[in-house]
Length: 98
Image (cartoon, rainbow, N blue to C red; front, side, top):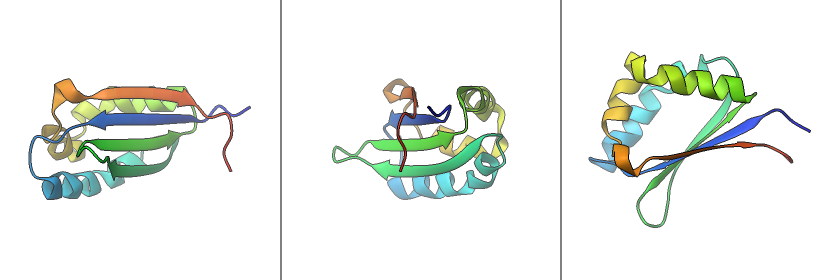
């Protein structure tokens, strides 16, 4: 059994999609520098909402990054373009990965 964690954050953008995507790319170096980070995918759902999916080595790494993202300057632009009340964050332990 793996200790790896999949974080999924569903949200709506407050502004232009292009600006959100560019700001997501701009925060990538910060995200990659976080302990336990493995990969990230930002996707757009059929209804226009976004799904940000990140794999972490473990739950402690996922929670530590979530605790620090609000103070991370590279993430400020991205966070400013997210409709806060629309955010749904979930963490799931990965049982099978191929």
